[in-house]
Image (cartoon, rainbow, N blue to C red; front, side):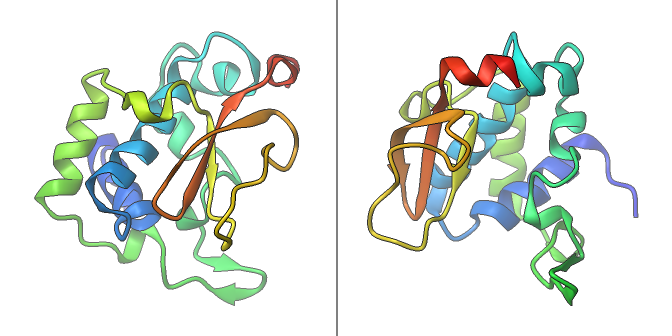
Length: 147
């Protein structure tokens, strides 16, 4: 089923951070907006001047956009989400150009399933910035610009 950008964004927020509270959902939405507006590197090329949908649907970026992972059905995907008002509220907030200061210009996040966050995003294109709930957020390093 095809969703407009707003609904797809709301579904992604719910899927990626629905259990992380309001700040966690804002943090994930902020990363997506940061990717859409970064002036260099891979995400700049993908967004082609700010296309949020292109960022959301970029191949292999969000597990929640995959219906299978490792050959197994992935039940936690955007197609199985039923976004609530809060998810649309955060999507609208982000689409209006807002980002959360507590993630700065972070372009990456992941859940390390650990109480600590590694200093660098696994490919060293991001340096640890902040932890929000179970997710670690990473600001781009100078190396990111070369991606």
